[in-house]
Image 1 (cartoon, rainbow, N blue to C red):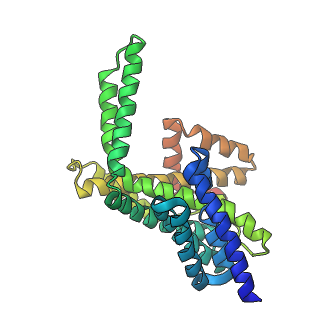
Image 2 (cartoon, rainbow, N blue to C red):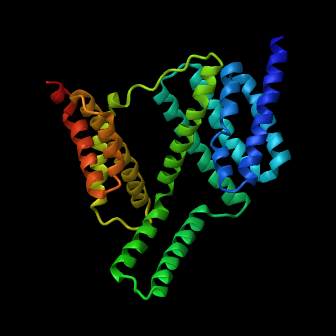
Image 3 (cartoon, rainbow, N blue to C red):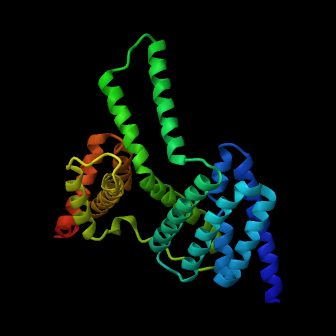
Amino acid sequence: MKGTRFITEGAMLLAILVGLLLFSLYIPIIGQLFMLSLAVPFIIFTVRHGVKKSVVFFIVSLLLGLLFGRVVALPTVFAFGVSGVFMGYLYSQQKNRYVTLLGGTVAFSINLLLLYVVVNVLFKIDLMQLMEQTLNESMEMSKNTLEMMGQTANEQQVQQLEQAVDIIKYMFPSIIVMMSFVFAFFTQLIATPILKRLQYKVEKFPPFHELKLPKSILWYYLLVLILSFFDLQTGSFLFIAVVNLLMVLQTLILIQGYSFIFYFCRQKGYSKAIAIMVVVLSIIPIVLQFVRILGIIDLGFDLRKKQQK
């Protein structure tokens, strides 16, 4: 009976996976939304039947991906399949949702980097070069649009944009991490209610206002910030490492700042809408810097304890 259920559920989830894969490959724009769900069948199968049987499920999914999506689908199925199995394992161990999110981010990061290597080697497509070319074309289109309107682009602004494009191409590793976080977050967002529906106990996210990152992150940030003031050779290993670490650490400190704002509003009895408004307003650079400073102070001097007193 168990063997029959294993085969039946496996076949059903494989059919769903093939459907999601076909939508993601052949429907423009909207198909990308279906791609965010590709890891979910692997998560459900792993939670219900364990990692060992998930290996069989994974191998069959690769064969079906090759059959229905050809060679192009294989890297996608591989990346989402491995990440889904790993996240499913974390779910089955009833890990904290933050742990599952972190584990999913790490798994997606490794698989996306492997995907980049495969695309580069097999299909001779350099994604970094393609990204740089797209950014340069966008900048040229903007300049041409201004000229058509009878205006000339400010040379200083153009120079700043060109420098930004040069830096962005070196930020590929941190962009991979950010993309992986988005994939892991949406995968979890879709998988959790389904698992609850299947009567599986899923740990809740601890309240965001209780989020407290390790204090060591502040010291890493200060060290990297000091290194960024040195005249590093553009394109060198140290330059790329500093640029990417600075972006990731600044994002973490920003999250810490947001967490403190939610904590502060809760302590004072203010509406949560105020904290959400601050998050929205942080698209303004001065507000963004203020939130980041709050995150630094909270990490370094434990503002929450002082707030409690």
